[in-house]
Length: 278
Image 1: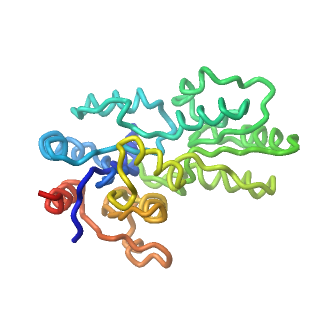
Image 2 (image 1 turned 120 degrees about the horizontal axis):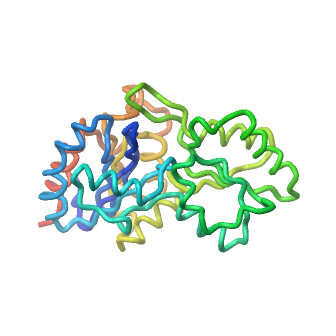
């Protein structure tokens, strides 16, 4: 195996449903929160005493768009993780920056839990649409409102916080934002701008935050397309964790092949530390 010199990106999509998300680390990116709270708790010693005690730089990356970054971090702290908002790369703050820079006023098709991230954004007379994992808010009326806004614009802009197909809750697999994004793309004849995984810009911003080059980094996540494929297209290596949304068929994906597989995060930590330069 190749040596790991710098750090890692951790997939950090944790929610009440304990969604197993994506993490990227400059040097190691780990799918941090699997499908069971008990697993998260059992990992605390590995995380606090081993990874944080190593020379690896770690960045938490998430496509979580049903809660604010502050709420997500608070939830992790209650589980015992030593983490701050500044260590997390999430799509909502990145989208807000884009909106401000381009003078865009969005129609927000988002979950109420993440709405606070957009408190400083002007939403009057919308000239774009921002779509996220809105959950129960993905009603016909709300989707049609977004469709109407886009169709009335000369140059319609659709910004999507991630484009995941589905994620895993304790009650089963749930549709993510991707299918709804695709519906608006098809209806309006446009292409969405994706903020979040697997967007190259999202991965690059996480790497820049910890000062690591793509070839020095490893991504660890459960999504063969969003985590593994997205990271590899940026020049990173990527491990897939056999938890969360992992499916056995992922190991035979026609387009994406992980650089390795691990059964859980603890095994990923062992692997990363074994291949860290002395």
